[in-house]
Image 1 (tube, rainbow, N blue to C red):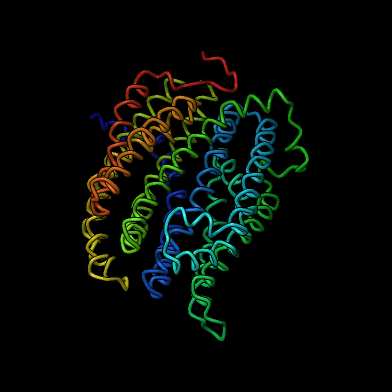
Image 2 (spheres, one colour):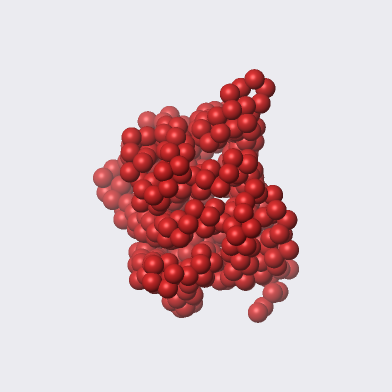
Length: 455
């Protein structure tokens, strides 16, 4: 493993300038989400499970948005490398249009049919009642979430990462404070429990929507133009963008629905099993923040370099990101091993749930390196290179022909405990790695989408 690139100060400087703000944003998000789970956790295991299941709907929603907006950002990153701001505005308009339609659909589903959706995961009437009350409130904010996510993706791709960090951190801190006040009824406010967490979450997204629009224009960013110009795109341009972006969205749909199947299996094992998974998920989110920052930095840099016609540089830099990701994942896995017991002790849960959460964190810590490689290859390299169709087919194959059958067999045929099913599901990550690593080495994933001739 050649590590001499660590002496390339310009590469390291640019990587850190992109990765650290995104990682910090993800850390604040994951940390405050963990605080929310801890606060709701004081209400009992049913409340923890309800929050976890309600968040599965949001998970589907935000992952689909991520697919749409990151697919669009493939173009904006390359257009930025090519110096074409007019086309960036058009791509943002397409992104806003598609994302808003997705937001309307999920908002209607969450507010009108929450019980129907939640019965897919569990038959526990108490959990369904609590989760439904949460969804009906949070669902009202999904359109704001869609618009914010579109702006975030484009701003990151044009090197305005710090702006997205400032907005999200301010909103998340205020949201967590409000969540504390409303969950427990502090300062004369009513103690609303799970509904209090929902109100605070909806408020957080509304605040991000307001702040991002205000700052985009007051700071005179490249997006500070007449909003009508966002929607002046030709039909040929629309289909050109959608032809690459939609496979990324479809990829995320199949992946996220697969994840919900995994969680449905966990929930059917028992409410305690789902509570253990939710506790482990908060640790996964925190451990993954640096890798998310690294993957996003990779995608931005690779996209800009391909747009500028530097394909060889793009490949070399993506190789460097891959090595850094593996080293970082090993370090993070070791850290998780040391914090398992202190974290679990913070929750009001039974010894059985605590034991399951401990085992889940152990499995996670030893397999994080594998997931980090796949994340950087998929998000940082293949998607940034416009190789969205191959990534889509690979995701569908690995999740639905390996992961989902493994979960169903483990949960309903072998009747394994939750940690056994969790480990069995990870076989799809191994198969995925074996295939996409060959694709990466072939360089077939590098596509110049903006027509810059390569010297």
